[in-house]
Length: 338
Ligand SMILES: [Zn+2]
Ligand SMILES: [Zn+2]
Image (cartoon, rainbow, N blue to C red; front, top):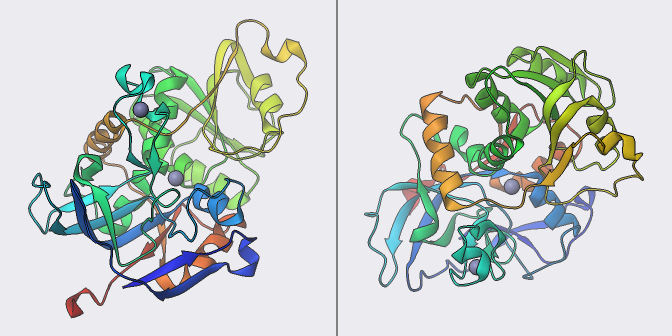
């Protein structure tokens, strides 16, 4: 099969992914072999490819927002008949045994594996995943539109939930890429007023189109104090500005897996019971809950499609804020040839 392989992390400007032929993986116990139709491009992929996240497997095939169909069940896998359309997300496997798993916090598992990072992911024509960790995709989404739901969507949903934002509340979104453009639709559905702070003017425009009441630069001050804010951009220097925009008792959620250093904070920014909380991974329950809500709303993702062979170009565009909504690799148009 064809896949984009990362042998050695490097700046994406150097096009480190190599499009090549690799052996099709064989599904082992409890696994399914999936034929990939679309794979979303996430900022985390950028962190993996550029080495901001220390390598866990090398070489590795990135990609953890996979939509595809089950080609074949491995030994002991029987939940889904071949042909079922499923999604694969970041959480590949948990041990089910550590203190966090036992406490219902599998997103914090001590021995988790992650798709496209510690195991091969979806920048490929096929991949294997555990049947217990795949998600049936609601029928109303096309493959390309569904892909960004699997990380940008699920993580954004967990951020919204942990922010405690309620109907009638005011929410700030800092950074308005794939996650922001989905989160705003959920927030609007909940009757929340959204304020979008993002450096790119095209992203500000998109936020307004999607119902933000205000859009401005990342350190511009929103016209109202906020009940909660979520930072999706990986830039620590936004933290003081976001804290400053919060009401007393407000919550700031940090939604990224990696962030540049946070500058020294004036305690007054945090005082009055403001909270800063990071979000790490997601539980399977988050995924199932979000996909149900996404289908009910229904969420409309805006995507820019790239062929698999152009994964480097997609990552460069993401790094340069040049994607409106989410970048998605379209894979296997030639699926008839299987
Ligand atoms: Zn665990
Ligand atoms: Zn992701």
